[in-house]
Image (cartoon, rainbow, N blue to C red; front, side, top):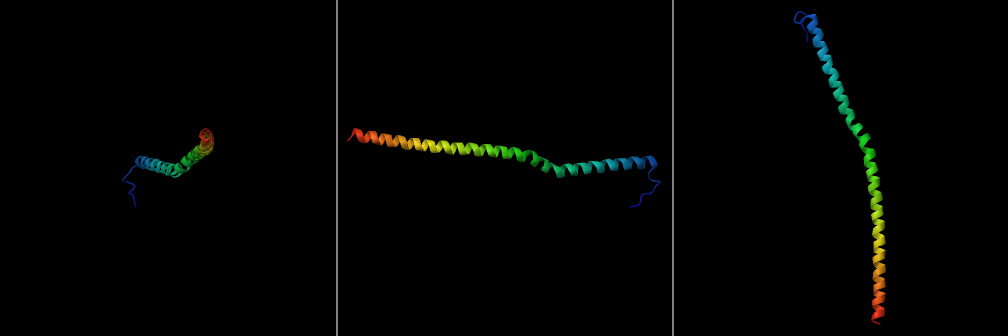
Length: 90
C-alpha cells in the first residue's frame, strides 16, 4: 500500500513508525513468552512431581510392609488363641 508522503509529516511518520515498532516488539515478546512458558513450567514442575511421586512410592511401600507385618501378627495371634483354646478344652 502506498502512503502519500504529504499525508504525514516527518515527525508524525517517525512517531507512527516508533509506535508500530513498539507494538511489534511487544508482540514478539508475548509470542516468545507464550511459546516458552510451557517449557518453563514443565522444567519447574517435573522435578517437584518426581519428588512427590518418589515420596508417595516410599510411603506406599512402607504401608505394604506394615500391612504384611500386621497380617503375620494376626495369624500368630489366631494360631496362639487356637492352641490355647484347644489346650483348655482338651
